[in-house]
Length: 194
Image (cartoon, rainbow, N blue to C red; front, side, top):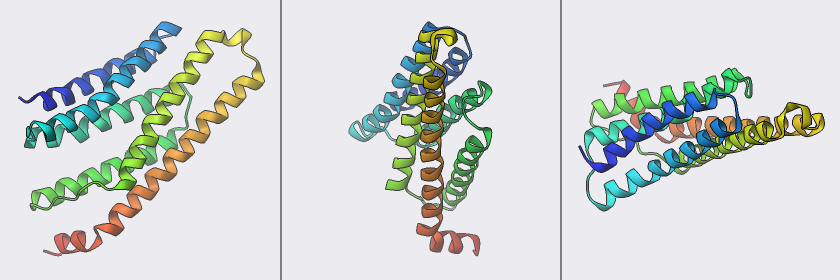
């Protein structure tokens, strides 16, 4: 097993740890969850960089990398839904987009067709990661200030910041999904009609 593949597996393990930590009360748990998320996000960049630099691309790595990304992002978003920080319908849109495009990619790959990621997908991923970091920052501020000493107006503003970031993520998720199908429409139509 290559080092990039091991990093993808590490990202999945970190995702499970983050989901556990974020549900625990206290500033230390939220800070540890944020730290683990940053490390997991860095492994996303590092495993791809190492795979290209060391020529260690593999079929297992190509399968595990996007799965690890989705487990990380969707796991954390679902934990935030459980904590009532973000609306479930927004996460459902992200989830449906990820499942649909992953399914289409796997179907195309079974026919030896590679549907590469594009700039819109990378912007979507960055917005998801940034949104998660912002939400963690809000959680840490709330834990640090404690509910009794945090001004209700400030708390409401923090809630609006979270909602604004989620709207940005949902919009970019929809744009990247629509552009994916539009860009690959000819290939997809040809593949389905075979």
